[in-house]
Amino acid sequence: LTMERDLSMALENGELQMHLQLQVSRDSTPVGAELLMRWRRTDGTSIPPDVFIPVAEATGQIVPLGRWALRQACLSWLRLEAEGQAMPLSVNVSPSQFRQPDFVADVRAILQETGAPATQLIFEVTEGLLIENLDDTIERMHELARLGIRFSIDDFGTGYSNLAYLKRMPLYELKIDRSFIHDMPGDANGTAIVQSIMAMAGHLGLRVVAEGVETQEQATFLAEHGSPGMQGYLFARPMPLGDVITLLSADT
Ligand code: G
Ligand code: G
Ligand code: G
Ligand code: MN
Ligand code: NA
Image (cartoon, rainbow, N blue to C red; front, side, top):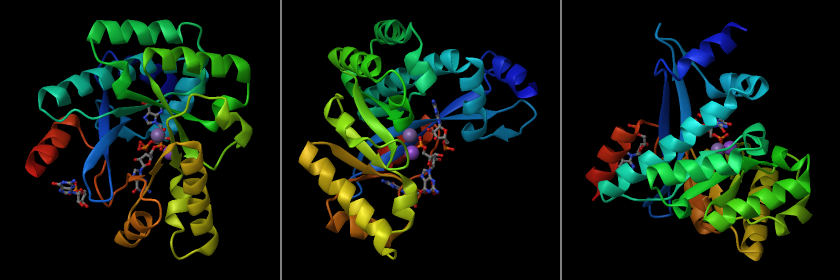
């Protein structure tokens, strides 16, 4: 309850920050980035998103937080473009945020207000979104896709995987959950799962991103087997936009 009260102040107090984590291709070229919310309170303590996001979802505070996140994504994209470093940006969208009646109108309004192109945004949704009201969900995804928004299934392989739904959704990408990457290539089962997801995605025409790539051995294996986009501490940690720009400018 304290957290609920504090969270409602966090936005206006400027305690929330967005970090960006780069995604790279097999030759380590940056190909995109995911925005990850950070909450650092005025007393200096940080609360991780896997603690405060579930609270925000339960209280409805995810709606203003989600609008803020999307606006940050648009502004970050415009700033990267101004630096000559434009790349698609991925934003996490919670099920309760996605299902909120005004969600599509909010997205339109933020795109219009900022002038950022919808085609440069990827919404990361989890399989949890598919549990309820599937027809409405898919219809809403198509509505957003018509604006130019692309969709990615986050933590793929850990949730409710009724694979038939993959064909009905306007999907761009699957993000292989980091638990599978973690087990690879030493563990035969983890490796088999990763290879199967990449093969299926290939047949469905979907892009793949491997999450949580931490070792060179994992990166080499992925580069030699399907070569998905890669995201993980091996390449870059989540960091403020200014640091991303410094990193990218040093590369070019
Ligand atoms: O770095 P990491 O601790 O950033 O994130 C933990 C979890 O919090 C992830 O599952 C991630 O999807 C979620 N998360 C991080 N930022 C956001 C955000 O802006 N919106 C939503 N809905 N979830 C987020
Ligand atoms: O939205 P999602 O659950 O995919 O958020 C990504 C999460 O993974 C964030 O909490 C982010 O900080 C974390 N993360 C990013 N790279 C790595 C990594 O290489 N290893 C681990 N263990 N976590 C990572
Ligand atoms: O120092 P830091 O923990 O932020 O580094 C995280 C990772 O970012 C390092 O493991 C390194 O591989 C990667 N990295 C460091 N400098 C660069 C760079 O100039 N370009 C790219 N693409 N990655 C870098
Ligand atoms: Mn994510
Ligand atoms: Na994930």
